[in-house]
Length: 119
Image (cartoon, rainbow, N blue to C red; front, side, top):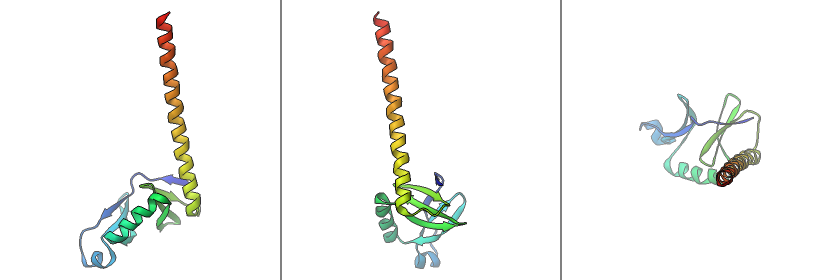
């Protein structure tokens, strides 16, 4: 199952010898900083790639952390990038349809109220 994680973010780590060698940017979820580190150029490349397709950026406790459309998602079922993209796009379409339907219903109520007040 794919779950969005709104608490996950990419953070800049304090400078140290290790960060100079391995990179100063990492993923932080909750209070934990996960393993992979990136330098500025690699992070910029990752940022561009995740806008077009899901990118697996970390794995821990049998789960994979995906980065897609500037959001983070956890998967524990072994989905591949294509499956993750399809599920997220499907959710986006469903939410857009729900917003559209809600707006249509609101417009319909406003029209009914205006018609009733004109009688």
